[in-house]
Length: 246
Image 1 (spheres, rainbow, N blue to C red):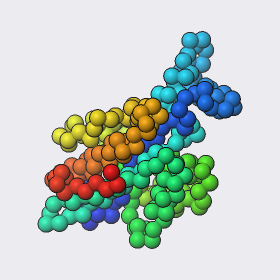
Image 2: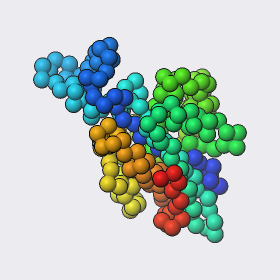
Image 3: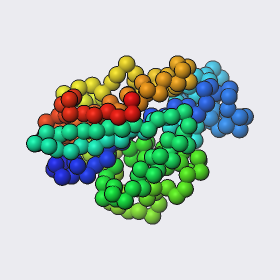
Image 4: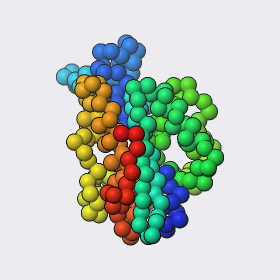
């Protein structure tokens, strides 16, 4: 599916998001109204008098760009030396979302990366739209061209989405990165953190950004290995993976 040269032209990416505020009650009244409306639709609980809107915000606000914030962006690339894949992964993380997004925007605008493709799992539906929307909300203009898809034809969008590759044209289902790793005998990307714990780590456990960044980087590494598996190549060896900024 991929050659060495094609893999070396990929920028692997993953992001982590949390709810925009620590709890539902901290939202301004207008945003409380908008969240409850969205949450009831999401949970199919429009007429449920017992619907727990506070819990819904803690559980799901991180999924929606209008209500979340980006706390970590991890990037990585692969180079081949002597036939073996070598990887480097870097994270940008901070309590200052605008700082994260500004640095990410500048990185994606670099001329030397113009002919690279972004690659990640479900990046077409989540990571890339979330970055673009949060950049606009935070007043970061102009958007990096690779995130601004307005007026572009589908084949002009330089994103390689491993979930879309796995679908082979099927639009019926979502397949998690963890499941594909299991199917292809790829070491689990999970650390002591999983996605459901990221909001809690950020808001309740002293903003444990280092643990969140490590989790994000492990997902980048897992996506790299999935691409290597799709290409029938040897997986990354741990000694050949360099993690930066942890």
